[in-house]
Image 1 (cartoon, rainbow, N blue to C red):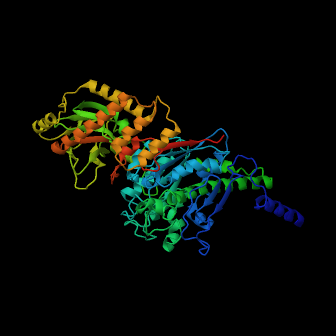
Image 2 (image 1 turned 90 degrees about the vertical axis):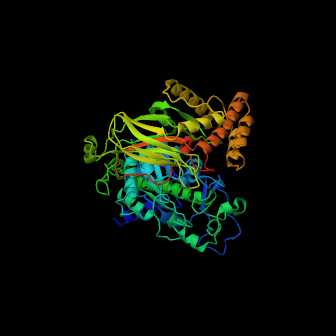
Image 3 (image 1 turned 120 degrees about the horizontal axis):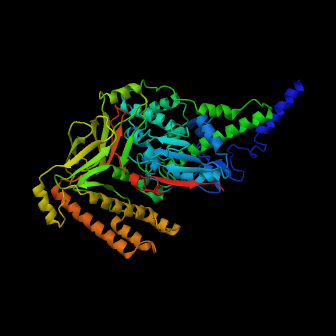
Length: 639
């Protein structure tokens, strides 16, 4: 009996020891055999660190973790207990199934400040295949700068595909730090609703919380404890979510401030060429591309690796002990399919239906238009579409479904009985100059109080803001925005600048013309009908990164793409830019401009979006991780 126990112990040791060949074929994800993976020793051994040697760029042949194993272990958790994540990583072992990863969040995840490298989702997309050549993944980055969970709670479907398998969520920097009352406030309740909505996606995805940390920002002011992560992580714990904490990994390095790659007394934007590889942040908020974003990527890839290794060893142990009744994956899959518990915050149930009409999604919901124009006001490659009205009396009506449903039956009954009103928010441009005022009314089906949409403010910025109204529940709610002002005075300005005075009668043909123009512009933007090679893509990246005259760069780009643009296209673009210049001068005098870029409808009754939403970024598709904002999707399939 004793000999049998000793023999079993030796057998287990050989299977799990570092000297054994553990990574044979099975369905679980496995680290690559031929890739060298180790850690750069810059934390514990200060004697051997060259203080003047920067962190090198990430190699495709030898992967060096910047973080130590200890730092990774204490800052990455959930690989051993998240049933959903474990089931998705097991799924990656299937040769006929691609595991779809989505990332949502603010500017840190979208890639702002990553000009000297990549955003962390782009690193993930580029190197997943290096780590796991026998497995299939795709990465979709739906992060947009300047947003919080109050927006994403409603518009998540625009940013995270419904068929996602793993969703990384990063809002710990953008969300308020000390929202009151504790947890029972708009920000934390919105975050919990967002988590519940994502967990209810069709594929039962694993939701991973990513807690970024801005060491030098005024908000966090170098205090370890001053972060919204303290409260957001509790919501994650309640739902058993895997979590990644930048603060847990690097805060002590920041205190020393003398290790290459982790300088915090200076930021890379002071001198990118000289400071790349030495600093962690590009500015006071955003990690740079060489070190900061790479550290976040290391944490994400470590989470995936550790989950796969855990499953692999558990499966081998089951085979080793001949435990035929032990079905690890059966238990994992059952746990992954389990229904959500009641909300952590009492009665904080998620809505079952939200409506997010941003950018081109707005087109099909216009019921009436007179004097408003669907126009791209961008002077660079990145489009800025919206409905613009300048002439007082110009009006536009949007027909939206405000008949919302809720997981909270009491809320739904209140909506049906007219006791509660649905929240509708109109996304519109605000600036310190040239903007006017719009009158907002409900013009059919639903009812609401009239209000004024103000386009002017004192801040020296031009951003998209949100105008909130409460509207009754109805299938065909008509919301009308009308430009206010003195029409005779503005008409003189139109004539002075040679612009045609808008027709304020409802012209249905204008809708058809609008659709055709937008379709042509969208086709041109996405490059349909032409093949753009790698060389042209690189040219476009260089032009985007360049901080010179964007108008001239845009025309130069079109001329440089051989066979891609005709002379007529270039001429039309020149005419468009010339007209925009004229309209700017007109607006500066008339000051009646109203620009509508979206409408959001939600039955999350106590949600009131805060901050500024940079909706124009959602319109751009392409790899702009080096510039920031927008969305990109990269698919890396193993062959």
